[in-house]
Amino acid sequence: VQLQASGGGWVQAGGSLRLSCAASGSISSINAWNWHRQAPGKQRELVATTLRGGTINYADSVKGRFTISSDNARNTLYLQMNGLKPEDAAVYYCEADYIDYATTTVGRSWGQGTLVTVSS
Image (cartoon, rainbow, N blue to C red; front, side):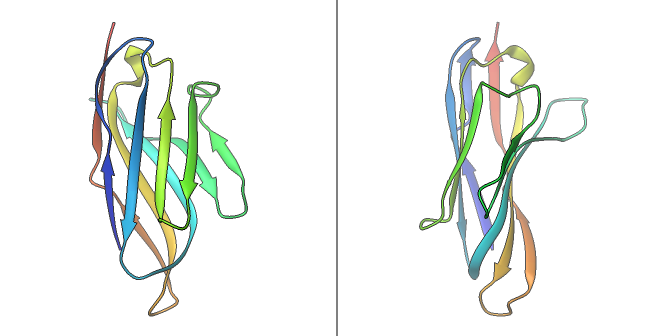
């Protein structure tokens, strides 16, 4: 299973970006989608999660500004980021926990990352 992230770019503080992550391959179902980010010199952190049952969680630092959503028919994940701050600048990675269609085993895949730059 491959994940392709896109949508990163440069934005001024207060602006918005929408990240996308498309999954392809042998997927029966996706049980959890996650967005992570990693800023230079910092550890990777979990930003947002959406579970198959509908549960959604956000890091405290992005609550009220970011919205995670998914299109299960298209196996695509989104992250709408509003009110961006300089501290949101990072490489954003998508991650999917899925059931492989062919083997019915659980798998995990990561996207390649997309860079978000926020200027003050």
